[in-house]
Image 1 (tube, rainbow, N blue to C red):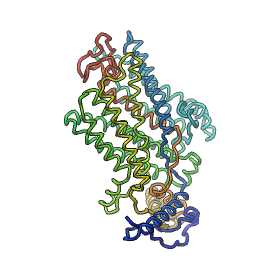
Image 2: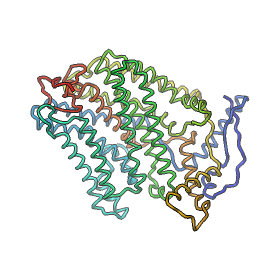
Image 3: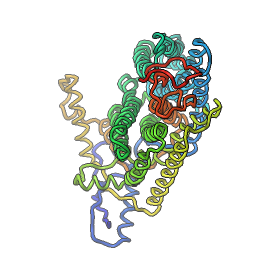
Image 4: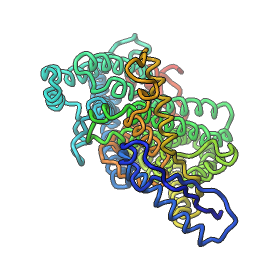
Length: 573
């Protein structure tokens, strides 16, 4: 569609701060249709990109996308942890004696969850948000948690807090978390059920981990900012994890009763999941960090906090692809002749291309009469999908490696292999089509979403008045307008708008450690639900060969010691 660029002359800067930040971008730019020549349209697009790019350079925040190399390294390391943990679980299952079996179960949980997922992946991002402390650069950052006694001691010295409390806090939390795990794994429940399964160990045990951790941190070493540091947990990990469980569980139950054609609904379910997760973390970061002003920005100066939403958006997509592969794996393990995954793959290819090339957003934009626009967070989500399938495939591969190490066939049936090839093929085809759309410039254009200084002032004034009304300010020293409209308020409004809406801004490269956070969290939850929905621990590790096994030996709700003479035994549950 041909377009012409309409530019109004620059107005004098109303505030010195805005003059410094807008620089050459002190124009109001928008694009509208016109019946004209193609050369003029191309020139208009180039001018538009240049003007919008100048606005991006004036901002302080840059979203970051994952890279192939770092995603591969993180996936490889995550697979290593998962494989070791699964092998230890298998050794514990075939070990004679209750004490030895329980000991190996706890050791396996250390490799599956406690060390790589909780202590390193999750706490690296949480420590980064709460205390502004990034992990070590390079590969060292994915083998060592920045939430460690020496690092927290140094942090407390810098802030004038008790270094002793800083040193003790990580030791206390890690010790309590391990003790909770041992308790939930070791409590004997009688001769029938014997021990608790993963629903209790992770589901309920994780609630205690979160609750105790939040209380201990606030009491011993308060975060730099309570609102941003502590409240970043739910929109970052909470929504991603809960949405993952709801999507996989809901679909698995629905497919069991509605049949293979229900597979067509999976891409739509995951589309909603990704959209909600991306919008949640984007809104949180803009509201609770960018718009909070220079006082908060100075506290976190030099830490590149935009890593947090960038990491979470990658996590949301990795979890979405993980949910898809988990459902497929569980389906072919329980029903090798099932074809629901084929139907779902076909729909995923169409919806994936439409979403990643922004044509879905173009249709929504037209249908909503321009009210619903894409933003940078959605654009980052689309770019993150080039690496999305590979962590999930690595996670399934870890089960094959564990089965081989335990002396069992790598795959429970041929259908699993064909499914994995299908997922890989669909990912390669989808990536190729989307890359072709970009190279051929078939990606749709959208009107530039800019704000004038007056609009920025009005937003800052409205936000400040709302804040003052909540705090009970009487405005005695200044008029309400003078008190509301400040240079920092307008600056923050500009930065927030540019971060979310400057669609021509370039993404940076995400460091290695956030790659590991998003990959490891996704891979662990995949492994957990493959065990739960794929026939149970005894089946996925190759001890039990009964397809569709429903006994209590699955380690889902209850987890009795496996009888090596009858690994598929136990009453149905």
